[in-house]
Length: 338
Image (cartoon, rainbow, N blue to C red; front, side, top):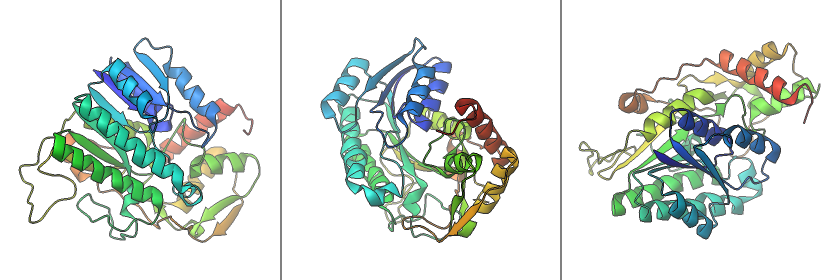
């Protein structure tokens, strides 16, 4: 198939593009390579994709509507995976306008391009952060997500609402994936595992929020990519069991679905750090701090809907995933701290 992947220089986008190319798909990568984190890492991810004859790349932003429309017109994608976004909960407290421009205006442009390009299926990144102040665990797609605690979370919930509107009005099949704390080789430098590894190797203290007591459903990158591919290949139709008098937020009479995609195994942050220490052979000096604004104490994905509909089954325990990240990190940075 011809598949357009936005955010193709990003962590998940690059890994997904590699997987799609390996199975014989044509991929058009679209990314603005912004400076939210080290552009050299994004360029290194792209360098693994560009030699492939089935890969093409456009450097532009989602909010650049003429550039996006030209990419759709030239490539004529059959399916689209929208992973480009302004990421990060904490950064949304510092620069809220970036989230409106990329996650709202940019996503609107994607929806319009898919509609006019008669795309067969749009899969897009949502986030576990949409559960916000909800404390019922595990988080299920049937739960209400009306109390976001960061603008990032609000922008992702808005994406789900916007997608449903297009599924309803224009019969555009859409699937939203609520990602749960993705980690692994080629990961994002603003995420805890990357930050902790760099600081521990440099002999610097690490900031441990919520005193290490919060839990996260850490999900290994290969398991995430497997779930995205399975979802991409399953074009949703209207749910015949949908009851308008008792609506299920995860489905619709329209061709629309939302799924959690996680490991279904929450791990306490303190344990995560212990595993990292074991892999590095060093102890961390910890600065224990309270929970940060915008963060939630716990995440735990109920992935039963995704398992039922696609056969998704995460297989990578956190001990294995962290070891693979550390091995990659040491190779990539060759012992230097960048």
